[in-house]
Length: 225
Image 1 (spheres, rainbow, N blue to C red):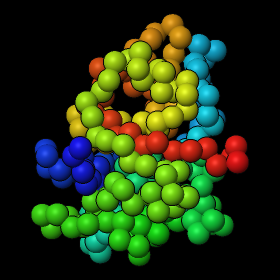
Image 2 (image 1 turned 180 degrees about the horizontal axis):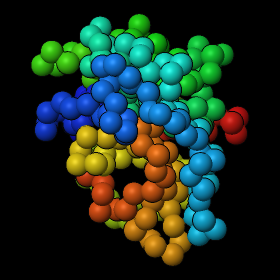
Image 3 (image 1 turned 60 degrees about the horizontal axis):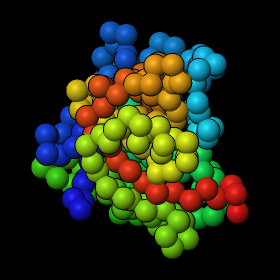
Image 4 (image 1 turned 120 degrees about the vertical axis):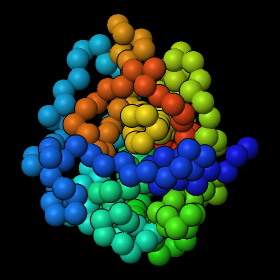
């Protein structure tokens, strides 16, 4: 099994930012979208199957968007610039009822701070914002959280079965391998359409053909314990 390390793109194809839509603003001077959005702004039709209610965390939220990740360079090392994969993992963990130190809620900001000070990032080719994919395993009881693999997309039918089971969590690589989002559901009419929580863009769907590869995490639901 390949042990992957990433910021917002797989390192086999190089490192790139996962900037959200900034409506013409330069990230160095104005890193915030002119209008933030929430899940309420992205309604889903009756044909959507979304078994687990995952929270939506925006990587450019002003509360944490300028927080440094593994490095200390503005704006390259900030959550707003490189925090898509980290935010997607944070949404998966929070949606399954996990906390930091069994108490503090998991958001992009708190999860990033925990990663920064607990060896959750590593430096590769002068980029220190690469997420150590096994690091979330330390946040649960033994075996409760497990990074399974980084794989090419399985069939759409297999992905739908993962959604139905609410496990494993699927963090998928989209937008020409520059961005990661969390899969939350699928459509019963257009069976190639998957619903997502996107930390960087005001959209909530991608088609199967948009997905390049998938990070799979087995995450036990702590809300059921």
